[in-house]
Length: 497
Image 1 (cartoon, one colour):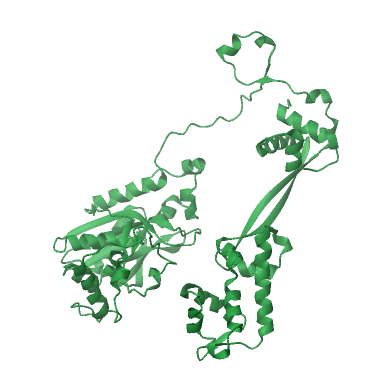
Image 2 (cartoon, one colour; image 1 turned 90 degrees about the vertical axis):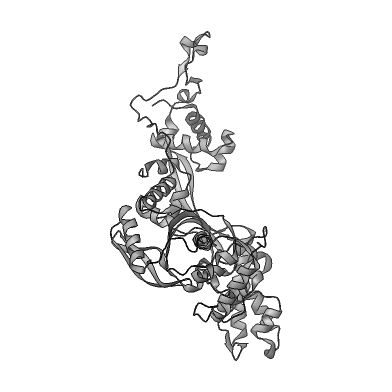
């Protein structure tokens, strides 16, 4: 074969130490190359032709995640709580005193859970324990582990396996990163290749009219081309698979006689949650699940709407409900947030059209503080819809959803009872996929506490479905993140919808 100039240069440099095993850093230094791509490309070519042998080592390193960095700076959560407990007299080791000491509720709960797992219990409201030394030792080992990793990334194999396993089970404390480290060494063929064959020559790779007008082109050396090599297939532009799916869903609902509605990403907590009869103490309303905003921090809501929601939540207003029985915080309802569902659009639509029959749908982005994994994203799309008319019923809702999924190519649909704060009855919708039932969303009839305060006396069939999960079915994906990877080759292989 004819070696390229990069291959010749790398081989010449490696022959300066014929028995040496060369690392990437050493080859970059001796060749004076700035980009490791040159080493990787030349090394692969030399390996394929028997001049060098590539040695691959699989390495795993442990680094701190976002919560681990906070623990490194502020102290491990269980250590901070434990240090406070042992500094207090027995009668002051209570949850109230813990809150008074500055610990927030969202960290106190998980912290106490961690301490309970190593021997601390709560009896009559007081933290108790039997063996202070054992607990202190366990917590010190954990804190030292975090401190050790904070200095630099550590080899996975050199760390205590039990501690790695423990922190791997805690959200964002540590990251485990895997690398492939390559090294190269000469083969006998690489050592014995004649020096004359390693002399670099200028190869012409492109023949232009300007080049042919110069003298000496007849004696130039030209880069070889493999005329039998596969050529890239030109791919024209096409819509992103997600956009294509959105258009397909839109056309199905329009074909079924629905009209499309839209809404803003930024909403008030009142319209996003209170209008849906979600109690203000509901876990989904905490900072851990909802993106609350600094700008706008508050959104104006008419006083009559706030008074109405307060009456519904506190005593049920005149809906026949008892409400939630707790005091309604109007300032909480004014908080600005990124909408957690597109249901807020349909509720506003009902409020604006309380006595007009309607069948509407919407497709839009929603935002929740989800941990990213193969089936969850913090920003995703939701398909929302309602049937608002005098004869709306649960059978009508179920038949509508079955028709929709059948038109999307999934005739096997079932529903099962579920619970949602703002619908009764409520169901979860599942389709049969790859031999199992997969949940795609929730549906039900809006409760009177939702619709009657808005001026409607008709039943409202409502549903909300995750678009990305439906995309996983249609595109036959196992990981939702594949939809948003900037990989043009993979995207081009996805089916045209």
